[in-house]
Length: 74
Image 1 (cartoon, rainbow, N blue to C red):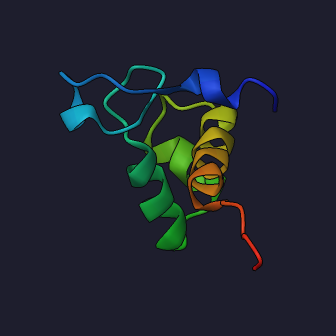
Image 2: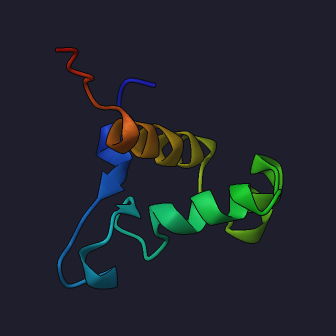
């Protein structure tokens, strides 16, 4: 998915500026918490019908981008 960054939005007036999915009040961390709790992507899509499969992938890629950092070897 090349456009995952387009699915992640931040707005200081919404959810305290935390990253959300496509301007909705579904935070990236909410999706990650559901996955960590053991729900499948299909179960999450049933629980949150406004989500699309690409939104879950975008949340995972967003999290990965925040954890990925260069390692400088001396």
